[in-house]
Amino acid sequence: MSDATLSAGTGGELKLSGVLDFRSGPELRETGARLIREHGLGDLVLDCSGVEKSSSVGLSLLLAFMRDARKAGKTLSIRALPEDMRQIAGVSGLDELLPLEV
Image (cartoon, rainbow, N blue to C red; front, side, top):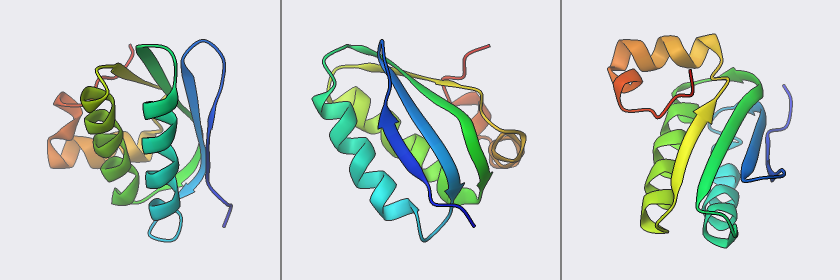
């Protein structure tokens, strides 16, 4: 398994990568809340192209990041959601709630 990371890129981009599971979730949750709160731009994009694998923890993180952004008065869109996460979102009905870039 790979370590998971969340880092700030350029132009309002946050980059999520690695394996999203019960081991990586808590640290990613804290990092995401901090990055969203501290980021200077109001429009943020969460790039998920580096996510290798995800359990339902990954979707839970996305929902938490959406709440964090809303609380901070920012918008958050999601780019390059991996297929396994899309399938979990579809089964659970979350695909309609997630602000996915087309």
